[in-house]
Structure formats: C-alpha cells, structure tokens
Image (cartoon, rainbow, N blue to C red; front, side, top):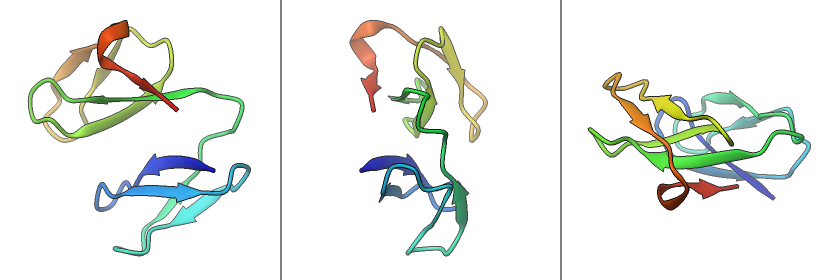
Length: 80
C-alpha cells in the first residue's frame, strides 16, 4: 500500500502500489499516483501547518496554499 494527499480536498488517500491514478472518495478528484521508484516524504508547512508531500532528499518545499517555503531537515520529515 502507498499514500498520497488528495489535490482537491487534502484528504490522505491509501492505494495499491503500482496504481497510476487514485480517485478520492470524498471529493471525486482523480489524483495521479507518483511513480513507485521515487521515495516521498511528508512535512507540515511551517506557516499554515498543511501537510505537504515532496521528493525525499529535497532541501525545502514550497506550500501550494500559502506559498511559504519550509526547510526540510532530518528531525521533521516522515518518509513514505
């Protein structure tokens, strides 16, 4: 199983690894599933606390909601 955050309503979705897209059961948005060979991580935005998903190893991530740039370090990320 894998997880992603819905682009429409920000709900955490679980899906079978290898799927190419996932339809959200809450808002019906079709989300593209990331390629399984990329490790992803989650972090909360340093400004608005929205959960952000980004490629593992990135030094920072920009929030799509408030545009705040959160620096990533080992202590505040969760790897998927």
